[in-house]
Amino acid sequence: MKDIGNSYFSIIVDESRDVSTKEQLAIAVRYVDKLGQVIERFIGIKHVTSTNAVTLKAAIEDILAKHSLSIQMYRADLFYTVVDMKLQELNNRFSESSTELLLCVSCLNPSDSFHAYDEGKLICLAELYPSDFSIIEVVALKSQLSTYIIDMQTSEEFSSLRSIVDLAKQIVKFKKNDVYPLVYRLITLALTLPVATATVERAFSSMKIIKHRLRSRMGDDWLNDCLVPYIEKDVFDLIPNEDVIQYYQKMQNRLIKL
Image (cartoon, rainbow, N blue to C red; front, side, top):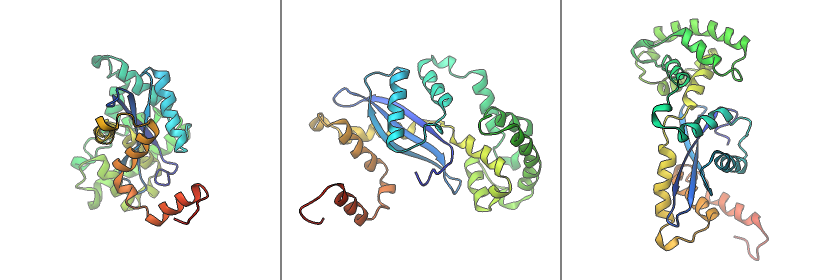
């Protein structure tokens, strides 16, 4: 939560049956951290009785509420787009608006000295998100973009970048995010869009290790509590043992001090 702060984040979901034939919905968040790095974190798994839109929405909101993630920050239109894509046939998934979005995002690519740069399409990208870019901010963005592209193309530090991910990290490293805040907002927004479900799919592989044939009666809460630290080992390795001991000590009165 501290890592996300007030940044944009998106939800990545996928579902699969566990060993006891229960439908489990794996949920992860994707965001850009304070260093400009794209992060995907698995936050939990939720048993669902069906995969219709109403049930999925309730399951996702339950996980978000558990982690105190703001429901208002969670874009309903993004969620329904994901559900819609899940329900449609493959040849209907890529609508005209989706194609336009991808073309606009590609204009941020820094490779070949920002060869793909197109100011008009980047302004169009900002206009696709009116709740994040007001009319006044779109005008200010146009002014920032004209200076930004000259700065990028003439700076040696940005001459050999290959991806938007590299661009975001380099912008933060050289504090260009303070110089071009609206451009950086556009970049983080583009990077927050989920492009794959690998993170949640890996959760199902872990689920088979934790909930196997001999543990087929494992409850949903226990399964979830085991999965999160198992998958996000690098995060939990940073938590001192003393903090864990104190957490359990304060959960209830005990006869002895842990």
